[in-house]
Length: 168
Image (tube, rainbow, N blue to C red; front, side, top):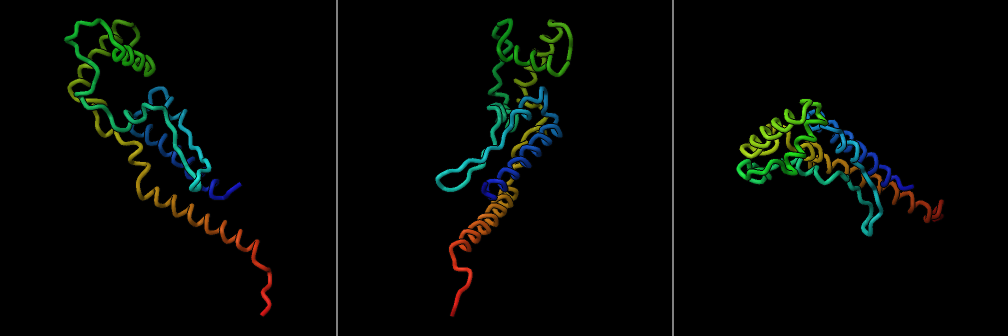
């Protein structure tokens, strides 16, 4: 197995750990599903090795938030419920907030109204978990580690084909 691959896998595993810890630190963990389904996959590509950090598609909303203008709620529609309200109700249940359906529904509507005014999340300090972990500086460090490992592997391959002793 390639040491470059191993170096990338270790870097990916550290990224996963730190992404999960940042989600927890920012209090962005409800069910834990986003953290528990993150993976770091290293594959061989035409140009070398590729490290992919994979997450459920909603990671982008957790990282970037949703502006108020994009919140899918309008309490003036007259509808009794919506997918958005049902989603909020499910989130409230996962978080263990409230007990009866009418109580949960009223809290969900209150949250939706606030989201429609301020966006999601209301506390903007909870955004950017990926941005704070996958910094340019950190990616440069990983790239440097991979380059060093590649040089070691290239030197090892060259030493296999060069004669052991050179007679002059």
